[in-house]
Length: 244
Image 1: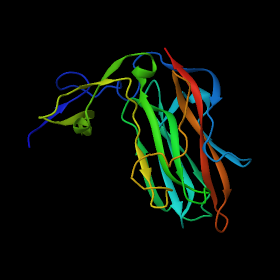
Image 2 (image 1 turned 135 degrees about the horizontal axis):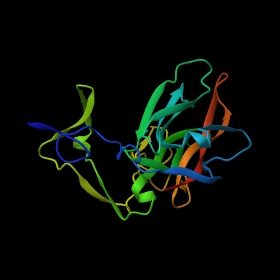
Image 3 (image 1 turned 60 degrees about the vertical axis):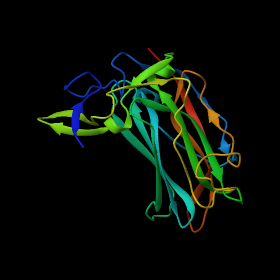
Image 4 (image 1 turned 90 degrees about the horizontal axis):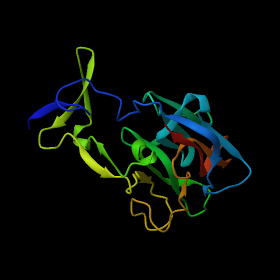
C-alpha cells in the first residue's frame, strides 16, 4: 500500500502543535471545582493532579491491578498550550509491579472532561473505566473541528523534523462535530453485569466537568486491599476552566 507523508498543514511540512496543543494563548483559569464520584465516595482519598501553574490537563490513563487489586493508576497530562506531556502516578501495590495494565488515550488535541467506572459484584474494586473528553477547539466553543484521522497518526522523524505518515486512501483531515464526545473505555472480566466490553447500564454514573472546563486531576476513593495494597473504587475529577 502506498503511503504519503503529510501533516496537520497541507502538503509536506513540519508537524505543528495545533493537534497536541494550541498555538494561541490558551490557559487554565479560575478556581478548581470537583465532580461527584463515579463509584464509591468514602473518607479515604488520594489525589493525582498537576498544579494549576503547570497548565496541564488529562489526556489519558494507565490503570493496573496486582493480584486482582486495582492499586496502580498513571495519569497522563498534556500542556494545553504547548502540547508537552507528563505524568503522575498513584502506586499502592505494596512494592510490587503495577501488574495487569489497561491504557486509555484521547486523540491529539483532546482533553478529559468526564469519567465513568464499573465496579465488581462486591462494589469494592474498579473493574472498568471510561475516559470521556473532547477536542480543545470544541471546549472553546467551536461547533466542529478538523482533525487528523487515525490512519494519519503514525509519526516519523526526518532530518530532525517530525512528520505524520498517512495512508494515501485516507484524507489528510476529517471534520468532526463537537456534539460527539470521545469515550474510550476498558472492562475487565469481573466488571459487574453483562460484560459487554463497553459501558452499559451496569456501570456507575458518569461524572463530568462543567462546560468549558477540563480535568486537571483525579481524586481516588481508596480502601485496604490484600497485603498492604490500597485499592481505588471511585474516581472524581478536578476541573479548571479553559479559555483564550
